[in-house]
Image (cartoon, rainbow, N blue to C red; front, side, top):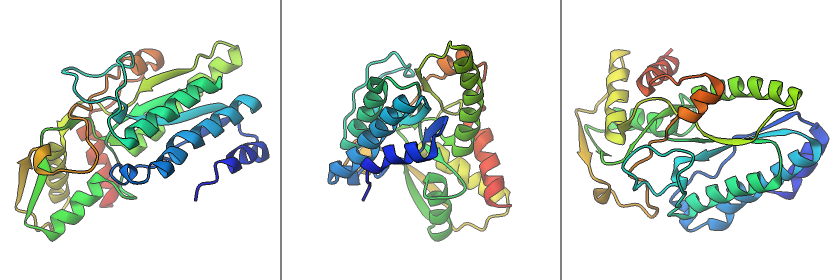
Length: 260
């Protein structure tokens, strides 16, 4: 059980200059039945960290999600677009954002999407496991977004922090919310197809013979997913002078790491 009240004491004990909150409750469907835990991790914990950061003069970095939007927009979402969460998970993540902003702490909120890595539990590793076990995979093809490598997030955050710590030293830091994803876009089906092709190019022995595109309606889940998860990265690029690599470039780097 998360002890939100222990977070402030941790900040007092460690006296950090920067707090990076990469923790989140990401079980989107489970959150429909366990909203209290989702709110504790995704809203109350960030609030506690933000209030502690405010008291002790630390800079807080907090990660949010494309799920704060309803996914009905035709074009890409910018930071100026109105949020419209649909599920319990979505609402908990938006509540976390709002609590961080309301705290008055110096903060950076990075909204990202479709995060994967060579470790942990994520879509890339799930597809590789299923492709080794099954001859056919059925993958949703009508949800669009930008797969984002966790290492890209980490490196981009480090770059942004160097910039912002200098700004704080000069007294001209401004808190803000930025979209931070890889460039380009694809569907879950397109991402799965690219993963399997990339794995085979690296010698992986996979059982999968076909990847069938399906609709969201054919794969019903307790929580709604946004059909459009595309986040515009122009604000981040303009502020930091850093353009993101294409998602396929990052995916291949991740697969090389996985198969090394």
